[in-house]
Length: 271
Image (cartoon, rainbow, N blue to C red):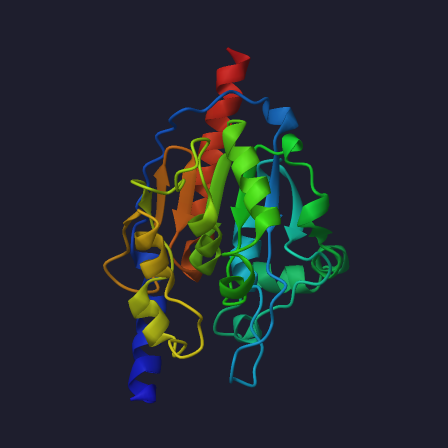
């Protein structure tokens, strides 16, 4: 059975490049921000341990690098923070040749970039007023330190309430479950949201390891959950100023939709 699941996962991942991305980049309620002043706060996990597996979890590398490369090319500055500050461990499985691409390998060899992951900013010390968007990366580690994290909750809510974009990919969407709007209601209530699906959790062999199923948690928070027809294929959604991606294959799609919103903000100011 394990062999069958692995073959299925390999097939759908290989098919990902052939599947179009769901995109609705309509911006709602987007107060203008000058592009020259735009800065994005990237959030990574500090958690490395599974309950019973010997290998380590942490940040899924390409969920950071795919997003990073798109925004960096567009001239958007970024900072990296984490719930506890300091080192963000890398998920060991994300470093296998099956999942890495040339761009991610290049980042692994970039001393300055890797230093950022060794010395992330402590979320409690970050001032949200300087950011126009926040992006929650994934990796199974986020299932332990993103859902009930008052410091990153404070940052995301402040950035959203000042007209910024809230975005996440894969398990990073666990951070959205705790977020509230200015009236104290769940921020994702009634919103079209995606994230790592229950099916993908089962296919990945992690159903016995995770503290909760992300899809269920998003639905419980009132989200209108959506997912791709095939698991492990790129799928991203924009609903107002909230952008979400389903799985590791969706980081670039999230980045492109976040960038589209930031460009609309910049244009609204220049008029």
